[in-house]
Image 1 (cartoon, rainbow, N blue to C red):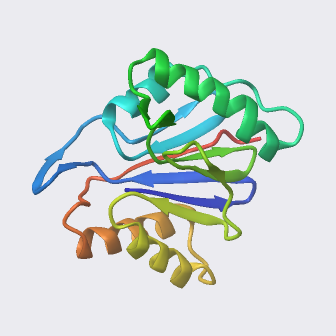
Image 2 (cartoon, helix red, strand yellow):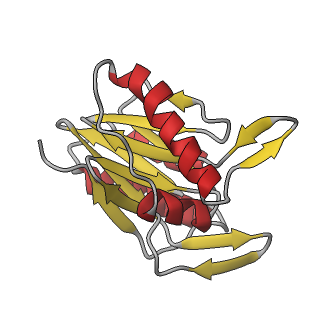
Image 3 (cartoon, rainbow, N blue to C red):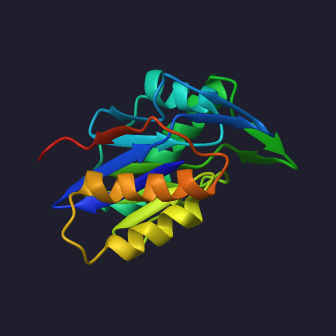
Length: 178
């Protein structure tokens, strides 16, 4: 589970440590959230995909209209990385990857398995097992005077309490200060 919050021109992400397959849960040491250049990323779906995002992906530096850049140039580089790393799947001639959050330049994006790039109208997002529980906690804490980490932790704890696929410890990462 990945939770993201935009606060004061920075993007903050938090993640649980669960690797889930059916009813099997393994607590992983390798974090699901990390920095890569000016980006902060948090992944679900596959630890292999996350390893490629963290160690192989060389994301291009953002330029121009950020949403357009993410949908085109950034996604093209992402697709090439996942394909070269043996992760991208092709079904009915359509490529598919996994779901993850990306923060850059004070903006938060969700990348879905079909490479759709979305930017939430709210300054928060969640993906993965328990995401609806986390979104409820993020909505409920939006008007409270909490730090981004406290909000993210509250969302992770809500999902942890009500979802068998979410467990601590939690890890955190943020975009660099600008």
